[in-house]
Amino acid sequence: MSRVFNFSAGPSAFPESVLLQAQQEMLEWRDSGMSVMEMSHRGKHFSIIAEELESDLRGLMAIPDNYKVLFLQGGASAQFSFIPQNLLNGKTKACYLKTGAWSEKAVKDAQSYCDVLVSASSEESKFTSIPDAATWELDEQAAYLHYTSNETIHGVEFQNIPDAKGLTLVSDMSSNILSRHIDVSQYGLIYAGTQKNMGPAGVTVVIVRDDLIGHAGKAVPSVFNYSEQAKNQSMLNTPATYNWYLVGLVLKWLKAQGGVAAIEQHNIAKSTKLYQAIDQSALYSNPVDVAVRSRMNVPFILADESLDKPFLQAAEAQGLFELKGHRSVGGMRASIYNAMTEAGVKALIDFMAEFERTH
Ligand SMILES: *Cc1c(COP(=O)(O)O)cnc(C)c1O
Image 1 (cartoon, protein in one colour):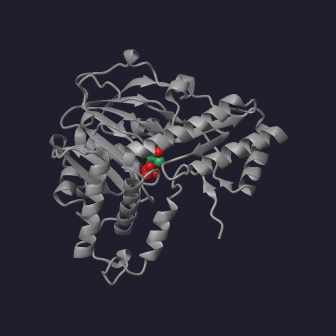
Image 2: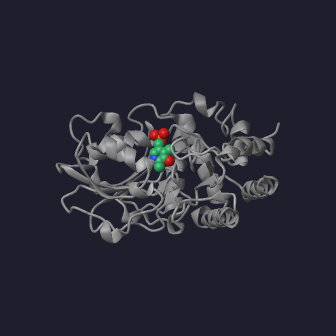
Image 3: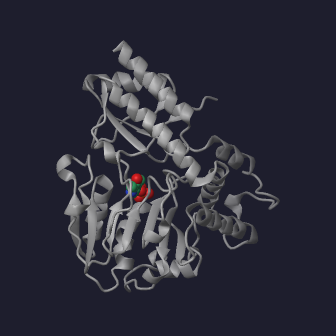
């Protein structure tokens, strides 16, 4: 067996110890006599998995008691529609910051439900920056302000919580949740698909403040009605049980690493070294405003596009996979989520230097 360094943007690399634990527990979880996959979601064993999952996430993120934590299906993309449907509460307008491909999609879906005010957009800079907060156009009649804390495709990350000027703050944290400290109490709602930093695809975490739920319109399907799901511990219907279990294992792994504060230091170290290598080279460059560069997704382009293919081929020969950039941006992208080791980043940096030397 030879496992590679996997720089995929999502689904993405897992901590190896988690995969091994899942393998060990495949046939029998603790002393249950069965695999997690075979358990009733209402049974006593799965109840333990569900309780530990929620309490571990609450602990890691210091989620206050007046927030519900939901584990839903449909991916982060489903939330693009369910957020306006649940949160508009009679209002007709919502504000959105457009800073990359994912917030652009969130805007598009929200437009089916309300007037979307694009409060700021960095489209003109090809999504390589975040507009100065002083220029944002916020409307106090809006139900909320939505932003994407890390733009997975463009490699742009908010380094601070945006000032929503009193509006309810909603954030898509799919690609940087649990990678850095955030103060949950500053938010009305946080959501994230699990396949970047938390585990496999198939679960969407929604963290929502109590007072914001219970106002969904009649047309909202019950499984996507936050208050219905909250009343039923996210088990209004059968949840993605095995995925919950895997997310739970990743959270326990993160706790064992020292939690979010400790992993944040690793993430700073990994990304700083990679950006330094890019900035110091004559072959590679990163187009993003230095102040808002992502710690999770590092896009870079080669000065000579004809080297893209040889670069990717040579990288794979060294066991460095999934470095091709998103088709909309081109070039390369290294996604270095929590589970990417410092050894993996070092191997990439060494490879890049060697490739530059020989080309
Ligand atoms: C991956 C991603 C999504 C989409 O997630 P799905 O689970 O495929 O719907 C949305 N937002 C961001 C920031 C992402 O990185």
